[in-house]
Amino acid sequence: MTDDVLVVHGGTPLEGRIRVRGAKNLVSKAMVAALLGDSPSRLFDVPKIRDVEVVRGLLGLHGVKVTDGDEDGELVFDPSNVESASTDQINVHAGSSRIPILFCGPLLHRLGHAFIPDLGGCHIGPRPIDFHLQALREFGATVDKTPEGLHLSAPNGLHGTKFALPYPSVGATEQVLLTAVMAEGVTELRNAAVEPEIIDLICILQKMGAIIKVHTDRVIEIQGVKKLHGYTHRPIPDRIEAASWAAAALATRGDVEVLGAQQADMMTFLNVFRSVGGEYEVTDARPPKLGDPGQEGGIRFWHPGGELNAVALETDVHPGFMTDWQQPLVVALTQARGLSIVHETVYEQRLGYTEALNTMGANIQVYRDCLGGTPCRFGRRNFKHSAVIAGPSKLHAADLVIPDLRAGFSHLIAALAAEGTSRVYGVDLINRGYEDFEKKLADLGAHVERP
Image 1 (tube, rainbow, N blue to C red):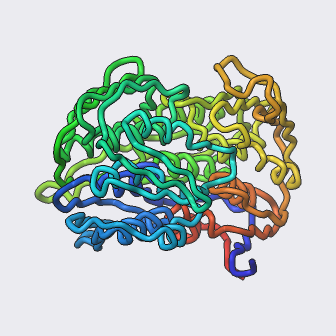
Image 2: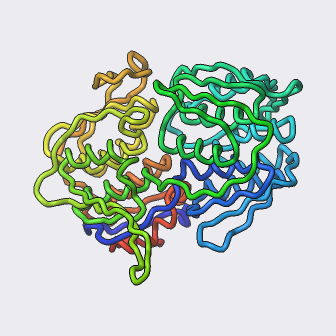
Image 3: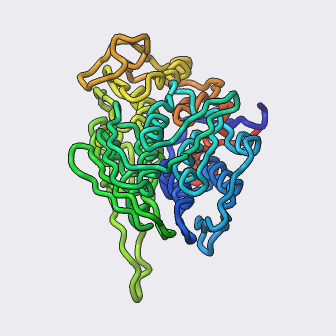
């Protein structure tokens, strides 16, 4: 564990400029989509994170040739020789990632069968794959459960279907899209997720030759086609990472410009950020022209001085306040005057990280009750999914152990905002979703080091 620790000397405002690349929650799915094409695909602005390595390895196991392109962050996928992979190899490469479940539809189309290992991911709730399996069965897939994982086949091919999700799950929506595009006939998905990353995946599939209509009221209609070709795509930037650095700027009383961040996909976050008392400035991109090198757009976030304001906040599916924005922002809310209320409605066990903040001097109480009006699946169940944060609190250094990706970055922010020297264990987990975060910290003037 000593190799997986970061020593953080807190109390210094983060100041400077960093850049975010393609969204983690889109890039890995775009890589899987390349399996469906009959010609090579090119994906730009791919971050160097653990999830990308996992999917690259899994694609390689299935015969997809993945190479680095000419541009930094460019990947090229050649799916001309897709083949089966052994269950042992898949288990080794999959690790704790939950991406393998999305290989099902493309592999059933290309090979007629697929294997999915026991799935991992961050420990923030069960996150069952029932929605995925139910959808695949609706398309005509047969699912056999074995001790090592799931074996899927489609003896009669895959056929379009009408399907309604009980909850607008992002993963299940991705599953339906990746399966329906080459299923025979028309698929209608109701109560679909409509996050920006979902829309960007639809853009990719449309570039490949898919016919997908996004209707109102979370209805997506997909007309199956017989073949798809490769794509060339530059993904939307990572709005989770951008918000994480914004929260870090606020918590440390700093000033951080996030190049690549886009206002449209962050409107809900920006409203809350301003309500808390943070300031931001949006810079639009300017394309290069003769005598002008152009300018990359972004958003500058800063603490304007004075006191922060307490807020009442509820997470929700898009266009609501994203659950992945909640954890970093709560660290900043420990510095706001009054009582802030956070009602988590997406994941039932996403407030466990607050225990560590309390050991650092925060005053956070968690409750089983729904402290908000947003419809919630966890009401009257035994999940502590609401929090009351009393502030401002003076944070002090502590030894912290990271439980999951987003909580990990929150712990890191808390250590940066606290007085004294903290040791943060398990920081390599942050590499799953934050590219080169140690260099970015250094660029922003943070005093961090490996022991």
